[in-house]
Amino acid sequence: MESTLAKDAELALVEATQRLSPEQRVEAFLAHSRLMVELYAAGRELRAAEPKLRP
Amino acid sequence: MRTRRPGESALLLLDVIELLVLEETDYAVIGALAASVHGVVRASMDADVVLSVGIRAAVGLERTFRATGLRTVLTHGDIADPIPGLLRLEDTHDNRVDLLIGLRGLEAAAFSRAIEVPFQGMSVKFIGREDFIAMKVFAGGPLDLVDARRAIAAAGPSLDLALTRRLARAFGRDAADALHRLLES
Image 1 (spheres, each protein chain N blue to C red):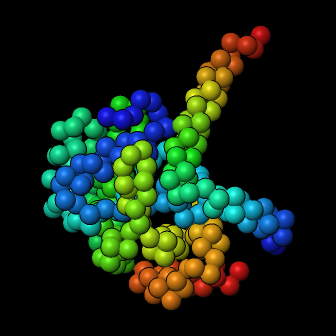
Image 2 (image 1 turned 90 degrees about the vertical axis):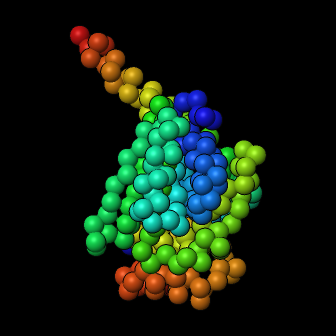
């Protein structure tokens, strides 16, 4: 089953991206990748600290 | 080296491209970076590039990249593998660039159709939109098909449908059928 809402949301995402220039999109890729790695590292640190928090 | 931390494969790519240009090796950026140019921005841990060279030249390239301090691994595809070889390059921050040593079904003209995008003061060659879509329907994974669908949506009426269909057919029946389904949906 295909969701019209999901399809509309994806089209809006595509349109929003296309308002950026190709150069801005590549810069956004770099920023997004840096943030993703930071988020992953933060989650890993939290998981590593978890056992110490448990009684 | 431009990289300072993890998550900067796009910057490692610039170092790699500088060397490829020095070695007079034609290339085109593919993968998530190309998806960001042709469709929607999405993060990735690596940068993917297809080269116009064969395995023999890749052996020399591996030596050249290793001499710069990068970790390198050159693997060979078997006879049935559409990718004849893969040269993986990694820096000390685990940023990674994968160089595909050709791709069966990809036209040599794909390199002349590549588009140039400025990035961090350099001009970077990205695979053209129609070639990108054809490669994605050939790869055929769920994320590949999402990338292809978004690139088609972003292109709108400017997409060269006849070229895209021809390029997909060059990758085989499955790719042509997958493209047909995407265009019909």
